[in-house]
Length: 96
Figure 1: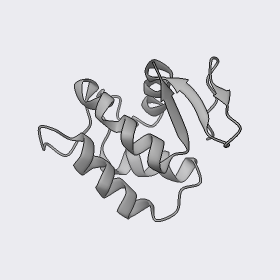
Figure 2: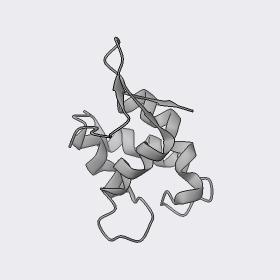
Figure 3: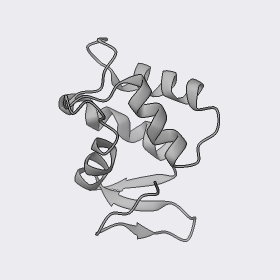
Figure 4: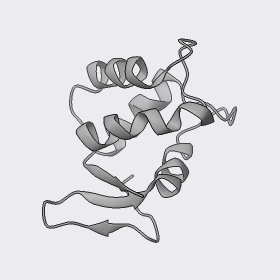
């Protein structure tokens, strides 16, 4: 599942540009249990859908980076923390 957001733009460097809200909407597609949080397994699905390699390692890094309350999930208040991960590992640039 590629990044298909209405307002997203492809840059010359091949990275997809989107707002944080567009990124959140895309990521929530992987919230399989619809609890409003992203688990390790759900984040792994997102990395794999983007064609990412070494998904287990990347997901561990992403969860560690974004999960400020250390509960093992990324909730709405921690989504902003995933921006660095998305830009480094998912080939996306988040614009303001």
